[in-house]
Image (cartoon, rainbow, N blue to C red; front, top):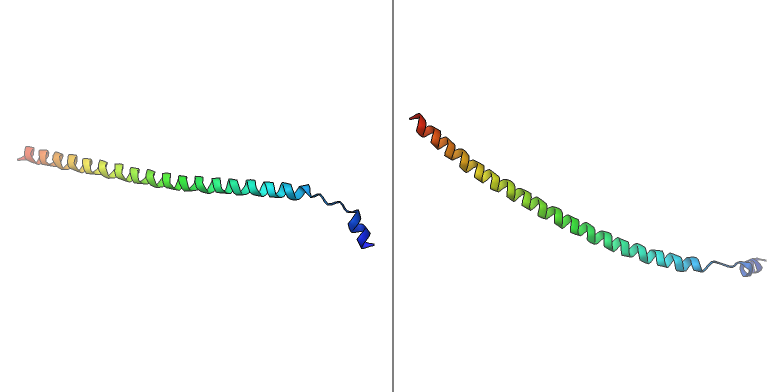
Length: 78
């Protein structure tokens, strides 16, 4: 009885092919995602470096200007 049921079943083998295709697509998309996340991380790092450099250069200039202004006002007070 079980053997006849097995013989009467007609499994959809196309589902396995579709599954393997989708699995390949998933792997490709995972690789794309990982490379994009890696690029994003590098871009964020570069952005932070530029941001910090800009801030440091601004503060150096600001400190020079501040010290020059202090010198000028001290000279005028004498």
